[in-house]
Length: 106
Image (cartoon, rainbow, N blue to C red; front, side, top):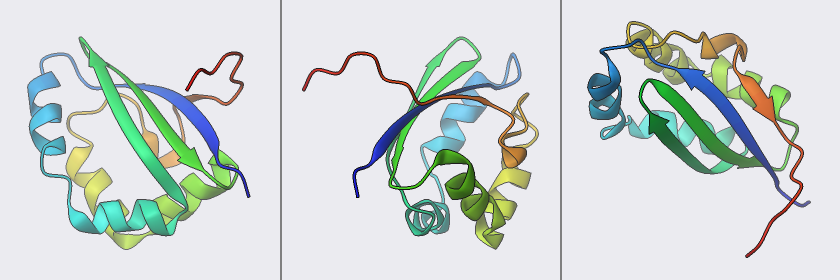
C-alpha cells in the first residue's frame, strides 16, 4: 500500500519555544516506537516562532493512525509531559491536517 504524506499545524506557548526544542532533542524511544507501531514514518517538524509545522507519512488515513498512536500508554505519558508547552491539544487530533498534495518533485 502506498504511503500518504500529511502536513499538520500546531502551536507551542509563546516563550516556550526553546523548551519545546530541548524536549524534542531527546524524544523518548518509546514514543518513536509508538509512532512506528501506529503506522507512521518520516516525521519532520519545523518551527517558526511558536508555530509548528509537521510532515508525516502513513499507510493509513491520518485520524485512525493518530488515534492508535494516542492510545499507546507511552504516548499518553509523553503528551502529559508536553502539555505545559503546547497550546494545541494534539491528543484529540485538534490540529489542522492537510492531505491534498498539489505538487511534488523528487
